[in-house]
Image (cartoon, rainbow, N blue to C red; front, top):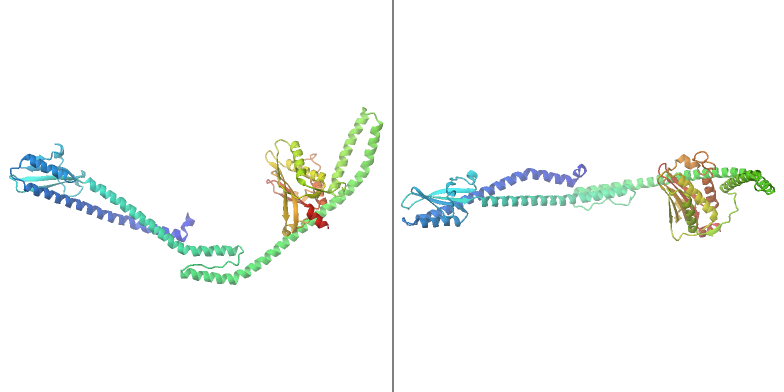
Length: 499
């Protein structure tokens, strides 16, 4: 409210309201008093003139006029106007109008001013000369029509003053708009300039000399200062953006180098581990063939074989992370059926409390991939997302096609400008801090409790993405969930790049 009062229209309207608040009550009082006095004086004059007419008529009566004739004259005094009382005292007797009751004849009280005695009747008495005996004509006229007329006049006066106030405020609004409109245009133009639109001119279409001069001065200042300032800001912004992109790219290079070093080390360990594990598996198979199937030793060796196969699977995951698993062959594939198949399988395996949502954009281009590895990637991401959920929340899987711009490609080491199919897995779980995000793709790193997870799920995902010449982007905040976006190059763009 205070903000609106501190504007030119607000101040002008407030000033007019204060002026009218001071002037209108006295003006209303003076006008209404004058009108009331005029109406009362006019009523009294009319009543007295009318009463004098009846006195003259009584004086022209014959001296021996019958009482019935006098009553007729008195009745005509009541019927001829707003009469309420009519009687004449002749000698010691009183003759009253037949339109009055006996009780009415006792109500007469001489009035010397309008409204006296508060009985809404103006009583007056006039001597009648020319009759055989002294006589006094007493008349009473209704004052209530004057009160009603005056009330109507006061209402009309209130309406007129209210209309005058509204008209004054309307004119004040037009005047303030004439002043404020060019000022607001200057304000809008200055905001546009501060937002970067240095070509915006500061001009005001106003006939007021002061505002036109102000606009000219501001335009001169804009031409002298804004251009240089904007160029400096642009150069600084470009340098800051280039520095930020350089630092981001360096961080990505260091991160990828660390992961590749870990992958090389893990791949070497996995190969050595396989070299030891393969003979063990072979000898276990030979031993199981020589033993009876129902013997206790065969049962124990079978458990050992299961553990060896599990160790073999872990070794295979490490090789996938290190990109040394080259058994899977890349084929051109539409990912929509692959994603639908995996989501159907995962929905059956996840707890009933987990809400799994799917959104596939129609018409996505095919990609050159190993379908089984894409399935493994999606299963690992969905499992990781479901473990991050609390009692409430959901996991969403979406597939879409995007065009990566040059500016966006700069921020990611493995992205080039072009068309990509994006596989996105989002959850509304507990999220991750920046320190955790730095290490999530390292092998054997896990935030799960001891014994719940190997720490290889996201490492395998990273290896699969790199093998497909793609990129994986992570966005997460504590308490706000996590989003994994896997960029896979479209088959046509990948073919052109290979050529």
